Image 1 (cartoon, rainbow, N blue to C red):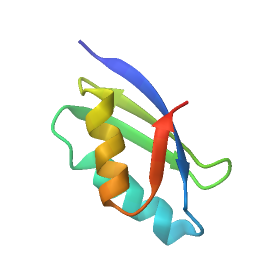
Image 2: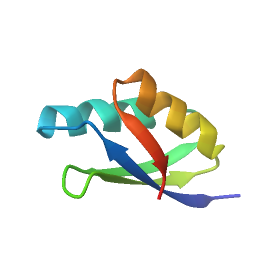
Image 3: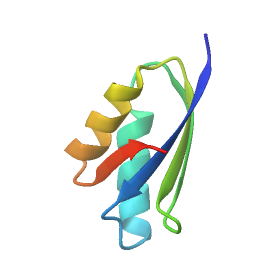
Length: 68
């Protein structure tokens, strides 16, 4: 089943941060698409993935995340 998850991401300061967070999310099995935006610090992830796994991936990339 494909779901859409909206995340609030804090700690990103530049486009490099956006790329880093995007790559971390895209590396998760089951993720179909990722769109990360510096302002307002958000991500939309589409795929069949547990939301907790998405949050852990963002945190391991060095940023804070929560379900928006």
